[in-house]
Length: 335
View 1 (cartoon, rainbow, N blue to C red):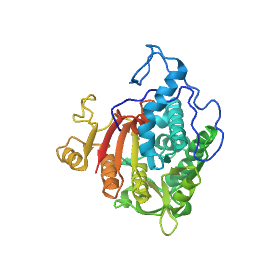
View 2: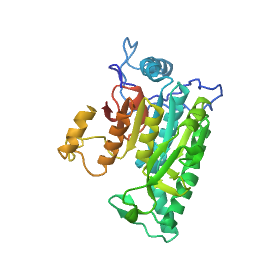
View 3: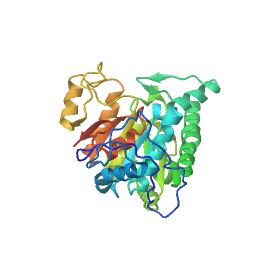
């Protein structure tokens, strides 16, 4: 969010240089704007009401320059889940958004969950699915499936999608390189192997990002004894962003953002500070599954993250809208 302009569809045959010299496939940016497109374009000195494709590409690049300059070289941590993970079309836009951001000089890090995929495999294996206070009850058998699905199937699928688009991704979970050390959740007697983040050592991430790669992190981590735990992906993303001193934390969700009135989708709060969001929580305007997301954002901001955003992952290219336009795609929380 910057300046007072709005970015158009960022993919009409654009071609950006990557941080490390490597040739991207020609298909990466081979998109054309559709007649009824989501994005608006504000262009000064437009030569004609119907600019040529080449002119449109140049205008888009010019409009995006202030945002690229602001965030170039900065780390952004993206938590990926919800509809954007279940829908293949939305999944493709998230992957391409990450690749584009990397290619214009940002340092994106992707943290993911995978609840629906876990449920699918638990049912296939006739393992009962239980939740307590919105958290998955994770016994030993469930933990084994969680680890295999998140750190294996889901993680490697995302890595392959990013690699296919021309930027190298490296998949890992919290246990790898001592990235995240877990501890049992306070109500572990009821939840089983559900954990919290005890400590983050971001050294492995810095090495990966400095080499021009995109880290893709599954929200599974081990305690000091080696026992694995299932940790909420929002929490992992927030703690990693704090440990790295990230410029932005972005949580992709299945809602528009924080609403002034939870029953009115049009009452989106576009920007709010920590004091304001805490008052909304005290007033009961923020509830349910939004509480842990907001708490995660507040905690990361208190530890030095510049801004934290809760955005609508159901909206195509919501990630680019949030980073490269003043319009945004949800709610931005500031310190």
